[in-house]
Length: 193
Image (cartoon, rainbow, N blue to C red; front, side, top):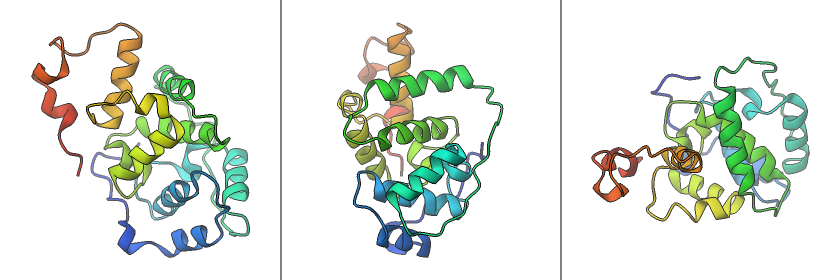
């Protein structure tokens, strides 16, 4: 995990050369641009994703060949890291997969990547290496639409995911009967910029 104050992802007006190369060779598949942002940010050590976006070497290699053929990119993903939050990780992954759009196989990889980023400390869009929260909202809506549709009050995504897990286990994490009157409302709904 990276410290709380990880570098900010590169804004779209200052895209990296790697991002440009990836997009020039993109296959035109769902998630191409989102994966390109994450890969470019990770290569610049921005965000909290480990090499290979938290995927296995085989998965990451397949992702590159499928989404960005002809881009000669060599990134060695880290393998076999003991995860002290494995049970929590499994719960987040299961929640995401339960709400897959089933439009493209890359949703499985996206669920793995989002789960990995959830284990870090910043806002989820920052931990993923995305350029803004808007890209994260797009990611959620396109890959996990039924889950995204439940975020009717625009709660921060990481808090929202954990709130969904607590509700699933019938754990009331808020001291008030509704978010709007909870004393922690600002912590969950304040802007992420």
